Length: 316
Image (cartoon, rainbow, N blue to C red; front, side):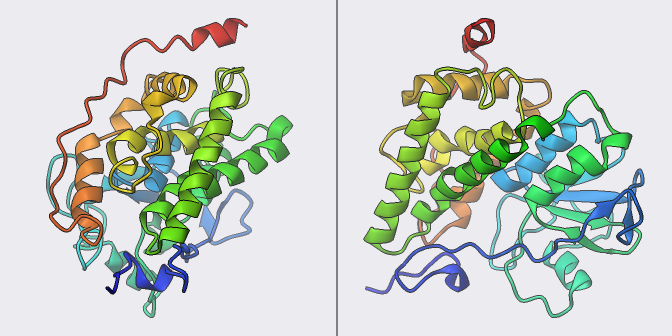
């Protein structure tokens, strides 16, 4: 039986998922070293609330209080063969900036011969009418550092004193957890699936242990690495556990990870970045090679607002 991969161009010969590289990596600068200067109301963010990568940029935008200077538009969470679309609906809308019907138009406007997969997030420059960057890592870094003068300096998500350790842990979480769920879910061979799934749960076990001794990944302060992990954890029990077959354990089965998830979800401005309707409909409806019936489950029942008890670790 022939098994159709979700993204054929990103599938290895042994059935593993190999994510494409981000195509646009230009930088907004403060010193004139790039064509993109820091200015209020010049840039616009295109995201999907279902997407963990895009949601991280939205979280950082909110935490840095950049919502007054960088606009945002949400795409329809249902993606078909034409890609991400701008439509009017609950929590998403048509494109008020360019009038695009599909996000692919932003890609071809920026690079007419673009042939890769169209992804979110996208940081768009309204002055030059092109994509500046579609890497969530770069966008989060720019929002924290480059746009600091336009937002809030109260939060530093990339502290200098832990720079090397943070980069190492972020890379580990990306490979084993953030991308790990996709490597398991998009695998087209038993071997590739089992390898990714075992690495994922080994990583979660390690993070569970780490969070038994500290409130957040680096003690009592929340950094970008925490939000990197949060965006996967908050989707895990709702979609990755069942849809991607990452079903050794649920996050709710990990006392420390579950409490940590609740703690982060309850931080100011975070709950509004999480939309379980968008999340579940995107994964279960869009990935029809994995879920041919496109039936969207009504569960699981989740209450992310109940007490988490993580304050005791701050006191300790």
